[in-house]
Image (cartoon, rainbow, N blue to C red):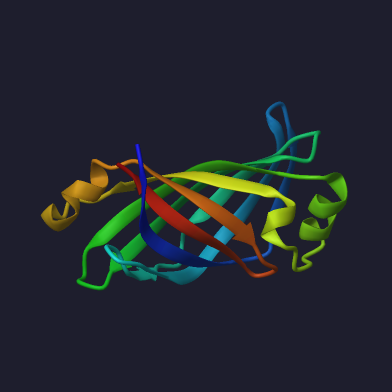
Length: 149
């Protein structure tokens, strides 16, 4: 198995909305405001309206669960679903939560990415599993996605 670069994503996000503690963890919703993606096989824009239905756990880790709509450079629309985890030392996670810029090497943030489209030009992507390394900035999530070959 090999990793093949797919695209770099820049996802603008709103401030988290705190829904409070639940039996599964502390629930937050982070709205997706828009963004862009560019790469050797995929480029376009991230449309506003998606979100991350995030769970925070007692150990400080976060489970990521996003849905967003993409429009490719050639007009196709794709659904992007990501699931993943972010964790790190408590002091680093506190800095992230405070909205500080933190070096992504100081914490672990990885995603699985699944794409869905009815556009025949992107059937290959619907049938492909992807993974990504991610970083959180004060106003965005940036990630580099790779197809698993």
